[in-house]
Image (cartoon, rainbow, N blue to C red):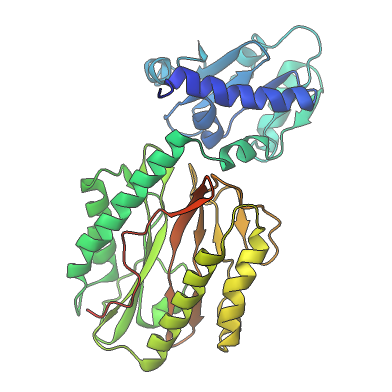
Length: 365
């Protein structure tokens, strides 16, 4: 039977409580937008709600703009009508005595922490480090379903945008069309600023869409994603408009070989660095190693970059139910670039390419 929101958020909150018990933390203050959403279900603006979690109770603090919303979305949490950063209101819910307070030290400003410490009137704080992020790294069924939908929307939308790739069309217009299609297909919006990089601009791995017009003979890279129910998708496809430079075709095929080989090699439990090496060695063996400068991939979920890293120095373990990208690329200044990216996960030993419905063989338009 499908979990209710109450059951789901209680289960996630109890997982944090287990961590708190292990680390001898009496209460945790959660302020990050993704952390608040993951634990409580609150989908309001990040920074406009915070949580206080004790062994027995769970509180959400938000102001009058969101109290109705929080009451509907967060049935497990006890609502307090107060600003997210009203530490006097938070203090009223603290256990008696001198409790050890866990806080998201990687998410809170020094000024806010100082105000919290002064308001609480004690100095018994424990860094949560990546505790909440680690919980979020392993996706439950509900999360995977939402990411699948976000991926389907993205795949459908790029297919609908391809006919608009013509000589003389601005990169900005192609990005606008793609984002429009994603919204029409059910996304709340793009999961990050859409990258459209054509011709020599393809050498910019994060070349956001510009005023440049697409021309015949150029390769065009689209890196984009949709946002659905708070969850992100992320994918990259590179197309050719007319016959491209033969070296660009060669580069495309090398990147595709590296990407397909890495997907095939992935096994749950392997290290991100080991998977990165498989793709990187292929590109290096073809003589293009110095043109692949970024990591092979990254985790995806409530944030477009979260959880595991898939890079040369990554110690992350790619466990089952993590969702991450595999996106090798080659970028050569004054020539262009190619990147191909899919999201992948694994359930019960079975790999799932979440963006598989979008073809990857070189498409010449």
